[in-house]
Image 1 (cartoon, helix red, strand yellow):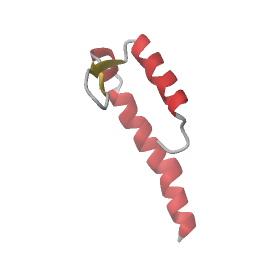
Image 2 (cartoon, rainbow, N blue to C red):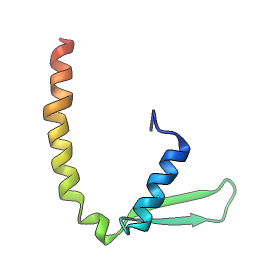
Image 3 (cartoon, rainbow, N blue to C red):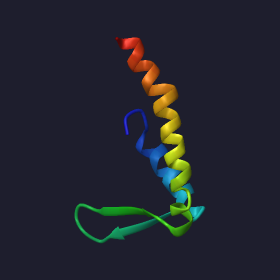
Length: 69
């Protein structure tokens, strides 16, 4: 993600893991591999994510695209 340092990303992912929103699976290989997945608790947030996405498209993305025309 542009504009996000590795340290900040790690901090946020650890918080989400501690809150039970995501699950972190580490694979012992070179180079190291980590996979993050939503937990059942995290999956319950999908409807919220969807509505936030719709809001962002309507209120942020579309106005910016109109300005560019």
